[in-house]
Length: 204
Image 1 (cartoon, rainbow, N blue to C red):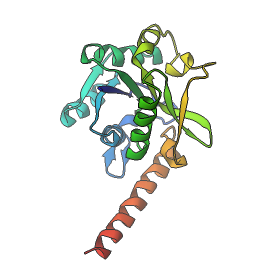
Image 2: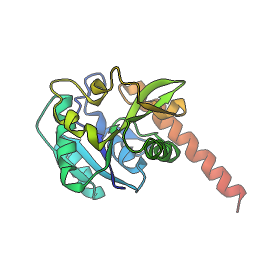
Image 3: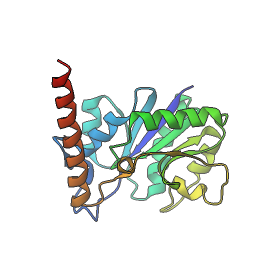
């Protein structure tokens, strides 16, 4: 089964004050952190309207759909259109400013997707509260391509009772909307790196 992952990286970052996709997160640009968080089983496409982000994708050898639309629906369509010829059986939409989703959670979403026959949407949640990312089945691709204006994929999930929720740890849902969010995520990564180094030293 071939699953796509569209990383949404087209936002203006108005609350952040600059292009947050380029923000430093413990020594790496935010968008790089997010790309590298996705397990290799996914076919990743970054959708963006920023040439600087496209250049980072080129350096990482990651497919990039560069477009000129300012609206969320345009970003969704650009990413999904790029995957149209890639024979995706489902597509996970991941915000570009959410770099802490764990491999365990990605894998749990895929298992839930398989268990529901690859027919129902699957999304991460914390304490039962739905969040992002969301894994959409191929049968919803047409609806996603018909989105307009500021609507994103979440708009076609309203009222649906067949959405499977996968519980994640709270920090996995943190995003970078502000400088405070940037610091919080960078500090979390730094703390994890420290404890990993300590564990490695103890095992030597």
